[in-house]
Amino acid sequence: GAVVSQHPSWVICKSGTSVKIECRSLDFQATTMFWYRQFPKQSLMLMATSNEGSKATYEQGVEKDKFLINHASLTLSTLTVTSAHPEDSSFYICSAEARGQGADTQYFGPGTRLTVL
Amino acid sequence: KQEVTQIPAALSVPEGENLVLNCSFTDSAIYNLQWFRQDPGKGLTSLLLIQSSQREQTSGRLNASLDKSSGRSTLYIAASQPGDSATYLCAVCSGSRLTFGEGTQLTVNP
Image (tube, rainbow over all chains, first blue to last red; front, top):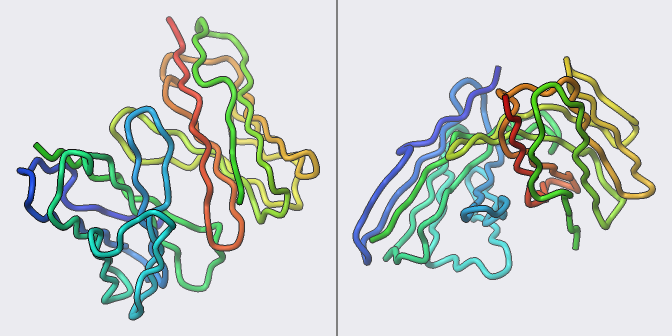
């Protein structure tokens, strides 16, 4: 089956540093990847949609200059949290939509726990 | 804007009980609805996907129904087990976008 990996699985950093999270589709090509954020006891909130080779589309209220998304290949998207602050601490989950399939075929990564001290 | 609501927010039952989780959505123009399981600190596991043209899907002890016109779905879990303890998320697909509910935290006590 389709597998999506995320790296790292968890990260702890000091306030003000930048953190990069990778999302990879291991055995399929993903034309579209999605980035979600989940705060404790809350549901997943879509942050942005990235299409390979083009700029990401951000949801309302998500700062594009703070959350940099790069989707340079059909198997890799990265989310960089720039100048992270404690309020950015959250669980970040990516999903990948397989090429040739509809929007219903999103495969989710295992998530990355970010803690900003 | 699509909104998804799940009731109850939390549920605790003794092992062996049958139970129903509820999901409602405001915009009936959907492609499909999906139920996920999430264990603490983990990603999502897809349980069942119901296309908009379908009324239900079954997998093992799980049965999900969809009433698109009324904007409702239910997830039925038969003969619950302690291993079923997790958060269950309902997600509605409209276009290329999934909108999630806040989940039902299920605890099955041995």
